[in-house]
Structure formats: structure tokens, C-alpha cells
Image 1 (cartoon, rainbow, N blue to C red):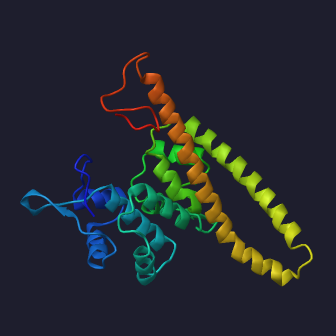
Image 2: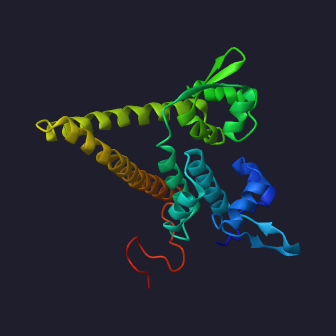
Image 3: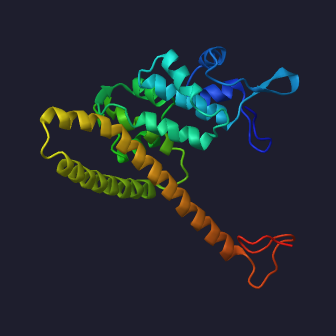
Length: 254
């Protein structure tokens, strides 16, 4: 794994801090082959990039879900070696989607430990606005399945209103899709034995989740591509000439 010369690099201390782990943990994962070695720069200082951070966060998520190091190693071996940070984040989202739907009451110190970072009062207020954290006297009731996602949203440069509106859109469409798919499955197995229905449900659940995630990811990529293409067209000078060597879209120049 190499770092992009144009992207900022991290020292091992900075990488550990960003991921909410210790330097010792980073080195341990490196010795186990779970994390690729850093790029060695001047004065023999190791430099880590976004791919290292994304892979480290994926490892931590799998650890959080109770996977053993051996199971994590098997999973990582199946992934392409050149997988970028975006695709690693998608894998992490899939792993996180199986987090148990549990609410626990924890102290402020435990809340920060699980969040993997220190939380300012404003951070806790934003987590509360997302219905992930609820104050309970001196303690906090935490939706453990959503905590890590919500903490990552704290660093997204969007207003709280936009994030909550996006959550409403996603929740509404997800529930509608789940309802329609459930109706289809109920009709397909209406005449079957209860044990067969349970067995089918157990097999279909992960397949449906993967299908929904893959379909949504591709749809979102297409929407973003059209948005960016439209923005580029609007910014192009009207009546201007194309860049040297550039032909019309889909047509070779020359």
C-alpha cells in the first residue's frame, strides 16, 4: 500500500488518535499482517494514508462486533489488496449494520471510550439530537448500534438540520422497502411450514441487506456523477473552446 503524494500523511501517533486506538494497537495489527506497513519517509519516519485509517477502522469495527483476530484476518485476505478508503468504508458499514439493537446506560467516561474520542458538550448535544444519546441524570443512555456512525457524522461538514433531514429520508425509504419486500416474501411462503419460513428468513436477511446496500451505493454514485457533471457544465464558459486535445463527450478528439 502506498500513500498518494497529494494527500496529507499521518504519523503512527496521529493515525492512532484518529482511529481512537493506542499506538501499541496499531503496531500489533501491523505485526499480525492486518494493517499494511507504512511508507518510510525521511529520517525513517513511517507515514500512513487514508487507506491505512480506513482499514484500521474496519478492523476495529469487526473487533467491536466480536470477531476473533483469525476471523478478521480471513475476511481481510478476501478483500482486494488495492481497495481504497471509500470501498473499505462500505465494508465497514456492512459490518456495522449487524450491530445488535441494544440501548445501554453508561457513564460519560464510558461514552467517550466507546466513541473513540473526547466529546465536547456540543458533541453530546448533537448526538442527542440524532436520538443516539439520551441524558439520564449523570449517566447516558446510548443506542450502541448507531453510536459509531453518529460519531463519524460529527465531523461531516453539514448542518444538524441537513443530517436529520437526510436521516428522515433514509428511514422513510428503508421502511417502505422493508414493508414491500416483506409482503413479497409473505406471499411467496404463505403455504409453507413455519420452520421453512424461519429458515428462508434467516437465509434471505443477509442477501437482502447486501442487495439493498449495493443497489443504493450504485444509485448514489450515479446521482453524484450527474450532479458533478451538471456543476462542471454550469461552470464552463459559455461559447468557450474546449481544452486542448479534448473532444466531445464519448467522441475521441483529433
